[in-house]
Image (tube, rainbow, N blue to C red; front, side, top):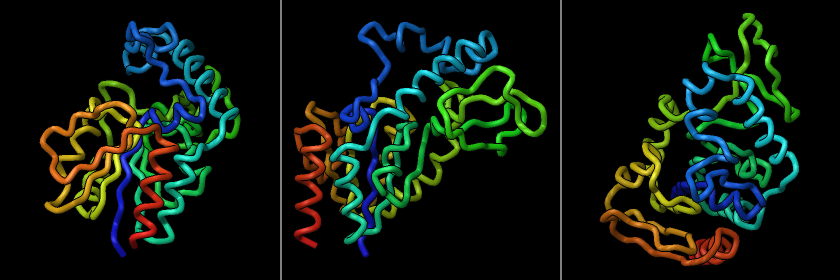
Length: 229
């Protein structure tokens, strides 16, 4: 069975109503990124960081997977499919995708501040200051902040190297290390980019650009890939 790897970004979740948070002035919901998405921001004002992610989580509980998420699930009947997402939402999973690797963490999970391996599911939107892990330390969002290592990148690279087809959707390939994944593809891998805007391919060969939103573009692409299989 041929292997398809899907690299997804904020654009696919935007069609479900999830804000990309970053405004034209570079702020996230009127906050500096340094204040709400870095270890330093956490050290300086954990209550602010908790509230920022509480609001992101509250929004996530109100939205549903869109046609783009659902289209990718259909591929599993014909291919070995691995989703590698930069998104911290769970919309791929809720749509029904079986194999989802989160590069930047998961919004509905929290973890200990003294033991990285103590990760807990959060089945409601609010994480409060004073909520602690079993070892007595404050819980924090299970998010990879700017300046932190991306533990899943090695596994993502291994998957991309095995891909017969790479689908890139909803990401401008500007954020590293995720953007560097395209450099890991083997010769002959077919690359599809689904995006209404022009996305730089950085010299990658065998690329087909589908200039459409995630829902429309993925429906078209999945129909093509499944009818030709």
